[in-house]
Length: 556
Image 1 (tube, one colour):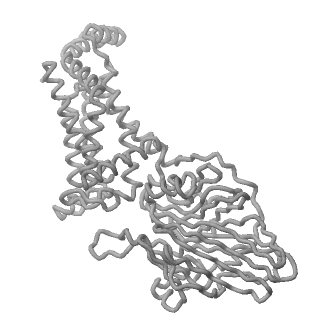
Image 2 (cartoon, one colour):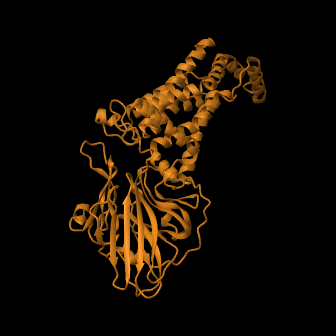
Image 3 (tube, helix red, strand yellow):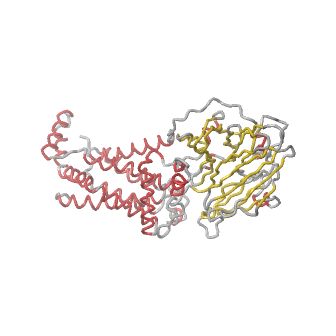
């Protein structure tokens, strides 16, 4: 006989192992974009002095670096920072709505850092030429500023004359959130036409070992002509530079909650390249199609630059109103996009209604249980009948212990007489699995849940329960054994639920299944506390529903 409990827990265990293994080994590669043959680009790195990112000098603090530099202040309701006037480089940006920690005086999250700091992370745009005698703006160019401060109401203009008859102009504006618009213009006052290539780059130093969450993609994220392309840092280390042709899309560096990217909406292709420069230094750069500028004429190139938080509603708004296609895919929704994104919107709706994300998660759990009520009822009816006929099953096992074929036939005959479907108990489980992992993903990717409190000691629903055994007992324990109160409650509810199910007749199986609540307690003990709270309430509601069905069927 295939006991109901065996099928139930074995399915859960195998499903978790399979899904985590697949997500770890094969992150969601949703792309059909094919890398173009490697193109020989002009020396972008040489033009922009990117070699300054990694050096032998001792890194300085950001304050020390920017103290003596000429800078253009940048400010709106979402960001604070400055653009380095020399080189017109976007290299210092703070996110005003987000704090680094839960501490009262925690500083704002810092996204971009200047060259010379410990982890440089910056962006710039400019021009390239095959004419080596032509003077072009570089990272050393000191621009002339028209304007005082970059805000949504006050764009700025930068100008530089190369002394050879070319005037370079950059006009930069910013919206109320994280989107910059950069227009590069060249005025040709020479006697001859010239050909220039617009370019842009994002360069950063990042140690992949510092990744915050193994289940969230961190690395390069891009949508190239409609196709999602994701490359992890460790994979980029093992590859040669990859080059794509892109006329529409975006590309940048993606962290768990933060993101930077260039956005393209050109009629012509841009050569987009992803490069590992060594020493944990990575670069994304593009070279646009050549622009021929006639004598006495001017030409412009426009590009947008995003640097900020992965606010899903905002990214959707950019998709709808700023023509940035699939910009929401900067968020790693995973394999269950069709569930994960709706779950996010349901949770945020409930949060807006209740005002606390923890209670929103609990209400979400209750609504899911209500939605699954008819299916669960059928399952628990079957399990109650299974438990009621358990003595008859054990009698058959004793009677036909030496004849497995006859035992199986007699057991199935018993099921038919009692009108029991032994497989029906697994249906709610298989429905719960994608729900569980979609919610798990939501709690890991949604910046709206970062630092969201519940009640009591739960100050961050995206982090594990902080009230662990070592905290309340002051006994240092290995991290695997150091679990919080909510995981223990979850394990207890799982154990109670297990006791309501038919017990396996095989003693070895019974011992194995008895350990399952303990195994899940330690495993989920290091998951986001919001997920553990959801699972605990779901178990409690299941217990109440199952007890009611058992009482209805006369089962103790």
